[in-house]
Amino acid sequence: MEDFKQTWWDDNLDTMYDEFVSWVGGRDSISKVFFRNYIKEKQYKTLLDLGCGNATEFFAYKDEYPELDYTGLDSSSFLYEKNTSLGVNMVLSPAENTGLPDRSYDVVFSRHVLEHQPDFKPVLTEMMRLSSREAIHVFFIAPGEFPEHIGYDQSQNLYHNRYNKSDIEKFISLNNLVESYEWISISEVECALSIKILNP
Image (cartoon, rainbow, N blue to C red; front, side, top):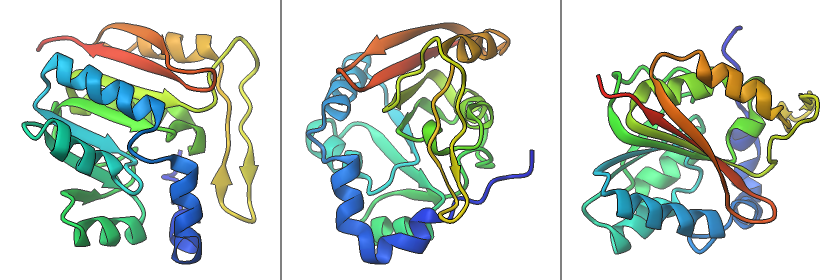
């Protein structure tokens, strides 16, 4: 598959930034709080926030777990420039092809990212490659036992998908980096997929 160039954010955030922030939620969002506590408990030291958006977690970790070395990654030039101007350690890159070394981070975390991709496989593969211990994705559209639906709005160049849970599990099971995986229920809306990575 040819790399998908995600343009909605750069096309719209100069006039819709406050609305975007309301959509993704602040640092007190249920799934953000849940995983900050989870990552502190695991005592992870390095984290890549893949598709970090406005990087609320950089500031939250700075307050709550300053030992964590946080890196945000986003494909949006608008978000990269805004975040770096606020002191966030950032990488400007597409999520599915970062060019970063294998096992660069203890944990690779993403939230509400896969639903906006043409396919979950390239991004999930990259997350597993970059993780030395765990890859975590938070879904805002929980996968289930229904047919995959790839919803693409050409006028906005924006995907809004729902995925089949069994398809994701079969795909993960074929990856030789994976030790185990589990689904975590976060709220009535959100769920997460945690993938433990084998030691080398």
